[in-house]
Image 1 (tube, rainbow, N blue to C red):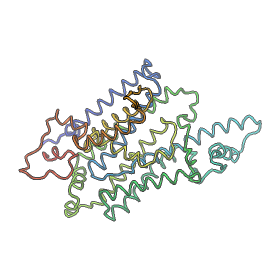
Image 2: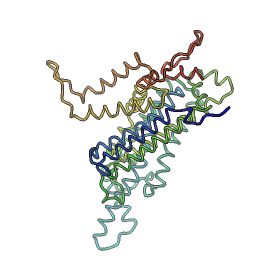
Image 3: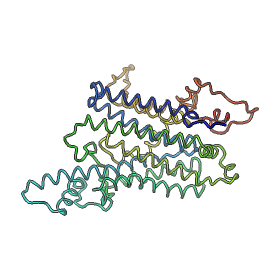
Length: 411
């Protein structure tokens, strides 16, 4: 019997990569840096950030849609990745400014003077002139990139080990992840956290050593990197869920007790998925915040992780392409409604302000999808693929109506 290739078993992966490649080419041709200038630099940055949000939505779909773990803390890992890369960006850019300023004095500056000048420039806003210990590696890009993955990964590993070994599941686990996110955000709001408190890190769009490079080109570089990361992430997760490992985590989602009875180390599987998705979220944050230009503790607020779950639910959890569709759709729609460019709609004595009512509309959409279309936008593709319900002789398909159990029942 001939074994099918990966793309033969997962045609959606090939279609997704082809669509992503065409989209990337179209944006490049329409950009100001390398094309006809149809798309503005700010909109290219918006598209690049959207691709990063699609990547973190993939991570959310893997842990929630496939493994059945509703984590309300994955945007914390996303923000931590952004903080780690932001430390290097801010340090290196400030170092250039300080070295240039000290060179005008006529005497060569000592390393201690440069370090003191950097610390004063960065932390003067919070009333400090000392460089915190956590900034010890901020001068090195390779080390900060390692920390951008190591810090969120280690936090996820420790938190997951403590939670899963105690067999915390369901809504209790969701509450714990939300509490972790809230505690981390409250800590970072403090000025003595070493990350400038409520001021956060700013000026991240300015790449060190590239002061003469236009933002048009920089925005395209990050757009390409975000597209590449999304493509590789999609292929990797498609490979994971299409094999035996994917079957096991879906079985854990549907009947954890039975999987444990069969001898599978359920806690190890959960811990691996939790840590892996945290690393993916951190990578997305590394690419997102240099395009956003600023990061502050509000990015870790629990509401951000709730938004992430809403995106996946609207797109269709249990479908990787559904997570991407949901994140892209809601993110771009949010940019339109919160831009302030849409005219208000007069409704008698009151006026419909889109900026104020956007979250209400998003919440209503989430409720509507939950009640009337649990498969989300991605479920529309099932009709084209003619995926129906297998004949189970009246047996239950499982507890999770939002996943691909109809298709799984055929295999």
